[in-house]
Amino acid sequence: MNKDVDLLAKHLTPNARVTVLTGAGVSAASGVPTFRGADGLWKQHRPEQLATPEAFARDPRLVWEWYDWRRQRIAACRPNGAHEVLASWSERYTNFTLITQNVDGLHERAGTHHVLRMHGSIWEVACWTRCAASPLRWQDETVPLPVIPPRCSYCDGLIRPGVVWFGEAIDPGILTRCHEATRCDVFLTVGTSAVVYPAASLVQEALMRGAFTAEINLEATPASSLVDHALHGPAEIILAEVDERLGLLRGSGSR
Ligand code: NAD
Ligand code: ZN
Image (cartoon, rainbow, N blue to C red):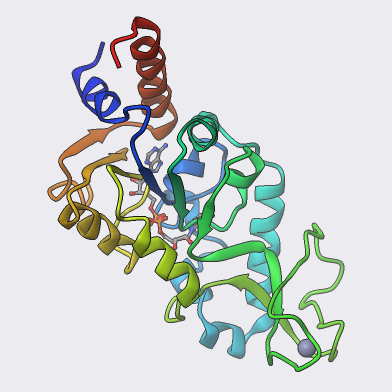
């Protein structure tokens, strides 16, 4: 058995408080492009140029065309082995929190409990002007959208995707719960480039609070030198190996 996998599995004892932070890499094997990957570009636009309030104010049609394209791609994807392992851990561990920067909803589709969505959901929308009659956000899973840009059914103005764009604040209630979840025994960061604040700072916070910290990513990231243990490889394979090891440990009665 791979020693790296073994070390992580040994910290995942049955009563451990486990917090997992995921990023786009966890959905890569499902076919959802990461922002920094080769197919993250759409019609030569960089995500950073489209996922901002300024871009939307300038050209709502362009931004919605991109979201409509992403929603269509995601709708055709299924959760992969990484989502499935994490979903099973969310049932197995009494104290389990999954924090995700992803907006694709694949953790929820895999059946994960206690998901904290830092960046909202691509399957939700909100009124652009936050008109008084409309709720803060609402579900809209129509794929493809019949009219672009879509209109608010309350005021007939524009609606926007229910995601947190670059330069926007994360819901303070969610952020508080994310910080609380760094009080844990094992903090695992999976498939995130670990450069986007505040997600990146959560690892540091968990470390300071005494958690065993580990990273799973295809390549080294700024978090690699901070964590107790960095495992490099595809999340869907490494998580499956860790889970298999957990099964063996449980079976051997050694925990
Ligand atoms: P990112 O695109 O910046 O980085 C993806 C990371 O995943 C990289 O470090 C890469 O090495 C790693 N990776 C790729 N394939 C992997 C695999 N199979 N196993 C393990 N690691 C793998 O994404 P980010 O760090 O999540 O941050 C960018 C922002 O983009 C986030 O805020 C997020 O909201 C948004 N985003 C979301 C989705 C989604 O919902 N699926 C997709 C793209 C971007
Ligand atoms: Zn409205």
